[in-house]
Amino acid sequence: MIRTWSKVWPNALALLVILFFAFPAYWMLRTAFLPTIDIQSDPPVFVPTSPTFDHFVTAVERPGFWLYVRNSLFVTLTAVVLSTVTALLAAVAVARFRFRGRKAYLVLILAVQLAPFEALFIPYFLVFRQFDLLDRLPALILVYFVSILPFTIWTLRGFVAAVPAELEEAALVDGCTRWQAFRRVVLPLLGPGLVATSIFGFITAWNEYLYAFVFMRNEDNYTLPVWLATFRTAFGDDWGGAMAGSVLFTLPVLIFFLIVQRRMVGGLTAGAVKG
Amino acid sequence: MGTVPLDGGRAGGEGVATVPTPTAARPAPGTADPAPPTPRPASRGRREPLPYILVIPSLVALGALFAYPVFLLFRMSFQQLGFGELVRRVTIWTGVDNYTELLGDGEFWQVVWRTLAFTAVCVLLTMALGTGIGLLLVKLGKRMRIGVSISLVLAWAIPIVTATTLWQWMFDSTYGVVNWALGTPGHDWFATGLSTFGVIVIIIVWQAVPFVAFTVQAGVLTIPEEYYEAARMDGAGPVRAFRAVTVPILRPILTVLAFLSTIWDFKVFTQVWAVRQGGPDGATVTLPIYLYDVGIASSRYGLAAAGAVVMVAILAVAMVLYLRHMLKTELDG
Image (cartoon, rainbow over all chains, first blue to last red; front, side, top):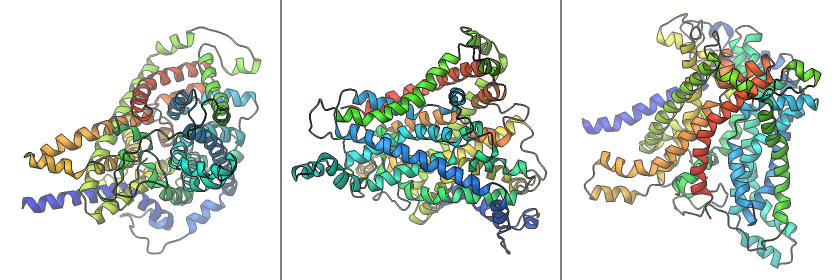
């Protein structure tokens, strides 16, 4: 009796955990594909018998949708490219060289990573106002760039350090210049690391809401999170449309996330168990 | 940086502890190779200009886009700065007036305490559930473990704005599935501050638990089986072995996770704002929402800046503790 119980309870708990964490995602999908009449039925319909794409059509045909997609992509991709390039340079410096101030620099990066950007929107607001950047997408690019930069440096540093320095030295011995050695030997090996780090940056910037909401007052400059957050209130209780919009917004993140998920655990806690 | 493969059992888990760097060249699964955390610098001259040139772009960016705004924030907090001053381009220094006004304001203190309590609840729930699920993951058979991992990854990957929309729909008073399941048709979950907070806490914890659970799982997977064997041979039962082996090894991981959760939850804006903009009747206004209301909505930039400084000061306690911890272990050498 006791033995069976000790076999049963972990699985029972696991089912509860699965229910709690997976149900909302399932509910989002089912609502997105359910005809409006069924969304309002009581008891609720759990499996759509006649799934429909109507809500997706509604969401996509809402004025501005493609504009917001473009805004989000433009802001996010530019910020990610900027921060990856800047971070790669810094990562090579801290991973490959010992120099005075290296440790201070690393402490700085680690500290800025924790900086509460949620407390800084007021000075940003004034700076951007001064440079007439308020309500313009470049303002968002700058904020996203600097907020994902520390993490990108910190993570890329690990990737660069993991490429054996001997490989680079061998290339130098074979007559490569340092730049050639980097480009032909180190850079190709960094590929997966660069992909993983930029995806992380992409997800962060793609999801960002506070700054987009505070700075982008003109509807033409909304990004997708701002659009999604106004979906319900702006158009009554169109939950089907809101869920279809959510699915569209979530899909790229989910795909990217699955690619990098394996690498995301541990970075910030890595030091914890080595003491 | 460790990995937690979805199908990783004890043998497949490389764990947080032993693999400090995320890399394609990680040690093969199963090997517990405690690589040194600090990068191996190439043996090159100490006085080279190249590393300095390489860090310049990032320093310029951080200086202009981070340090300068922080400096402005501090400076503004000593000014009377509203929309009028901004338009007329005048600077009125008022010393610590903003701070006196803020700290003498009962409403501000209410917001501070509310934020602290809200953070404490979020962190406690996240840590308890996350640790429990992390330990559960290790105990489960392969199929169940994959099922739990996938559902955790789903919750983790869903964007915050999606999550808030989604949970609001589930808690909708008329057609929400929660009211149907609980048999409380028509109940308005957003009528009182407490129950609105309840929904917000659920959203935050739901998204925060997966990271904690996976990290704990990875931590447990790094514990060599021999430790448990030794404990068994010394006559320890499962409970005793857990307390003598698992707990001490997990403690530093849990400490760091608790710091991080505190830092993250204290400054949450999106979930709170997207649910009811601090409502009903300002009952769910937390510090970031307060800063928005005072700073942007009422254009009292100086006062809001002082509030932001107070917020940073409170956060700094958790941040300093976390940094000290990280520096001791991550950067030595």
